[in-house]
Image (tube, rainbow, N blue to C red; front, side, top):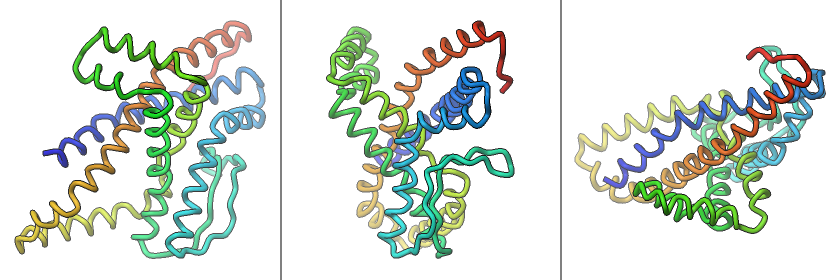
Amino acid sequence: MEFLSAWVWLFLTLIPLLALERWIHRHIQGIGLLLLRHPDLATIFYASIFFPGVALHETSHWLMAKMLGVQTARFSLSPKRQANGILRLGYVETAKVDFIRESLIGLAPLISGSIIVVLIGYSRLGVGPLGEAIAKGNFDAMIQGVADIRKSADVLVWLYLIFTVSNSMMPSASDRRAWLPVTVMLILIGIALYYVGAGPLVLRGVGEPLAAGVRVIASAFSITIGVNLLIIPLVWLIEKGLIRLTGMKVNY
């Protein structure tokens, strides 16, 4: 049951997380355009805000590749707009390898980012009591939990780190390229184990560690959603203020 509930929690938080993250990235780029009125300067502004998260993202790729014995080439943290119009904030070039190692290299930023977000959230901001209050629907405890977070030392620094890391940790399309064959392989192995009667034994062996990992990622998603919901009104107000001051508007 815990194995299933961990995955349900993950998928319930994934869709709102992606929607909020997409809004934030687009509108921060919009603020850069309104503020600086030049695409290149706006790109530097945008990349600067997310630089700590991008640095962790690309470093995670590099470290995982080294751990798996995969040769690496160029490493960049410089933003560059690609031919298809997508802005790439950084990259790591690796040698072509089997799809299992490629999938692990692609997954690395999500793992490292989730761990850091959870560590900051629980150890520096004390989000544990707030999360329990939300789960129980205890409104008074929620208010107290928010008040306790505001009292945390260097709360703005920790919120910024969560913001930039969590909104940079999701795997890109190239990071996810090898995930489909790995998923198909795991499904086929699972079916085979089920038919030979080894499914329950394997699940008992790997189920709890896997569920624990999924809970960490789901916790990171939940914390990210909370932080993004705090940041979005501020971003919206800044953008509306710049629209009024400049008389210009960004079409998304």
